[in-house]
Length: 375
Image (cartoon, rainbow, N blue to C red; front, side, top):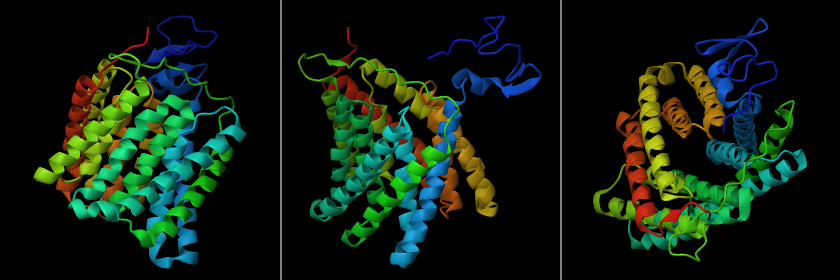
């Protein structure tokens, strides 16, 4: 959504400025600013949001590490990883103007992530009897909830997403019944860190109120659009699992995640998100691979670049989904490499697994209860 120019703008070409453009740099009353960022974030609220994401992740990881060291030393690194990700994605989903309501939502969102992780831990041993791919079926329930719970507004959609993320993290890290206490501690650490970050890093003015998008309608009539979105995401996830069972995918969870998050309120909207996610992810992965030597030899600088990329992710998520996907793919490749994962084949699989998941998500949106825009 384009923002109106600030007061004093003398030309429609000077987007949100009272001075002149010079490429990507804007000059206003002697001050220089990045015009490209100002296009998406004229009041700085999204850049503050990006800083909150980085702060929440760092505080949660630190608190998780400390809690792990005090109670379960062997799980300190894992607890820090889980807590950091719970807090990060809870902060992405939170969008309240009021700090008390924001704090409430953050606690609920972090609890949802911990519950999602616990659900995987409990269900995975039962489904493992089906085969190597059996535990992946837990992710289908999360995929369905991520779409279906959007019916209950911003917080409902965030809870669905967090449950899926909790399941995804538990699957990716091979959590077992012995790790249930660590999952609970990670949720507590994430909630405390996310609320603290929300209080410490806040814009001078309230962020804009999110625009409420009319609910999509199923072409069959009568079926809520959000339920159809959940079924589409779950169908795409099942297709990924079937391919993994037949051929063995490198990282099936990445393909399932692409299925979940490309589903939009209409089939045409899903197609647009698939194009943007695939293009952005390929660019981000290639940039990340180019920085592998940096991640291997100068890890602190790699983490600093990842933090900057997360700010870019927050700024562009709403209006430039392709750039946001590229920024996060870059973060993922860089942080995995900085953490010791140097397999180019595994890191590069993020690109083609995303392509596979996106295309399957598009097929699901076209074939399973296709949606049309609300009148």
